[in-house]
Length: 446
Image 1: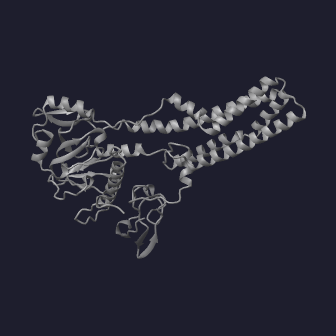
Image 2 (image 1 turned 180 degrees about the horizontal axis):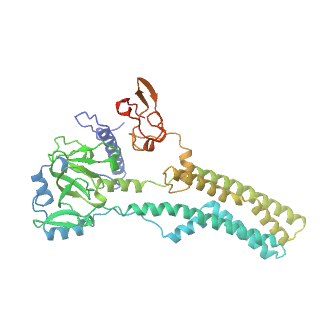
Image 3 (image 1 turned 90 degrees about the vertical axis):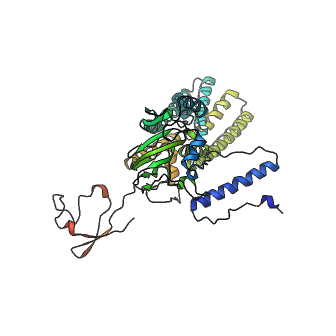
């Protein structure tokens, strides 16, 4: 039995938006967790990436009072200095990364299989030290060490190329923004913005922070595809929203950090900066996800453990048999090491790395950038991909499938829609036929 306090509370109004349903379910989940923690005497935990604001339902006068700013003159210099110390720079905190040398060492020495091969190499050197006449043990130890080292360097190089490209995206910062401070316009770097700043926004600008629109032209439109995947432009206005339960991301008077203003001009008030922006909350949730072993990593780990168990079992068994038969310690130790090393699949690591690298290069031709080689196999083992709309996982190109041409239905070739220069509509010298403008097109969207 549960008490009435444990029952989830629903708002009186029935909500039909899928985003609102998801938000309500998430709130119910955290409410239940908070009640469980309170019964157990634990401290309430705020989820990472939580994003909440009411600026979209607040009028300009109340906003100016809340943020202690002037909608015409902006903030004062002393306010800016104080707010900059409180909120910090308007930048997303980069995830923690390792130095390139540590990454290289992890590629060479990290992982159970690499450590097994290094252990085999060490055993070969020990065997050669015990019996220097067996030069083959020395050669085998060197070969094992070289194979593991080269494979690790190769894997590191492949992943480092992707990291360099990802690092290049950080340079795509918004341009300098025109803001009003002390009643005068100033052009400043986006990282110096603070909550309460009044900025000018115009077509073509990349929003430098989360902004509440306070003045807008009638044609103002924003592109939110970087946040929601929605490729269609969305209208923006300055009037406050009337629905108090409306989610911020659905509000018509908010523009978010990283999105593009396609049309119109106006003014906006910065209300969130840095990691507190909507983009920052998404980055925090993404960083909070735990690392899960890939399917191929689990399979190789399981295989190596089984092989290692068999190798040690055989080695110890034959060592015991040898000791009972001839009692020659050095000879039996060398034999023990030989059996263990012989059962180690030395070529498996190199084979897997080369196979994944070749696949990654084939995907690069298709404009797919592989950050981690093991993710290539993970994609291959995926059975279901869930996507909310066209353009999220596709190229967002609409193609014509069937056309009525000279009163005949023609099936179009859409294998390369961006560079189509062949077909019934083109002449032999790849020029468009004159009759083409008279075509009646029947659109069939993929």
